[in-house]
Image 1: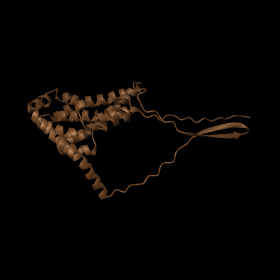
Image 2: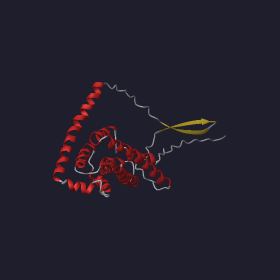
Image 3: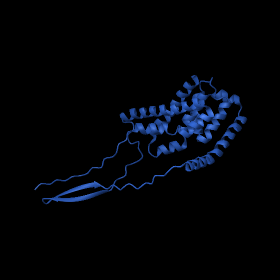
Image 4: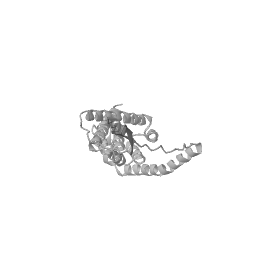
Length: 250
């Protein structure tokens, strides 16, 4: 008689941190919607620079994460634990010898219905988004110019003007706590540009602000711990300063 026993081992799926950090850095910065917003308010040169900067910073953040992970600095930084999958146990007999085989039970995929997109449906979606965003856009544009009427333009130019070497680092630092969202911040920055803020400082503010907003960091904290968040924030802050300084030289 011989005995043979098989065990099915359920291994964890391993995903390196590099692509995740690259996504966390680049994803909040820009989108097709924000690209056209930026082009309308600041011009295509600024909008394309913002878009390219988001890709470059994502690659840099991913490279830093890969370097840190290779040295074991990112161990136990994930908050999500893999869910256990149900298994089906089969008992087989061969010559009186028991043999068990555990197989995972996979639920069949839910049927999906393909939604046909028509011009009327697309137009309705555009109208719904416009109704939601247009009042915010107008309101924060008014607020930006109202604040500029209260704050002397000399203060803005002295703090964030192109002639000041500290204007870009200061704008990058201000973007960490004071960025609200795209609809609010873009018109506010447009008003500050009209009061003497340099475009490099504006670019730096928007990069750090968008990537470190409450929504972006809150979403990242659901899957990652603070070392990962530190890489994301550090990449955005330092990267935005370098990009803003280079942009002012163009």
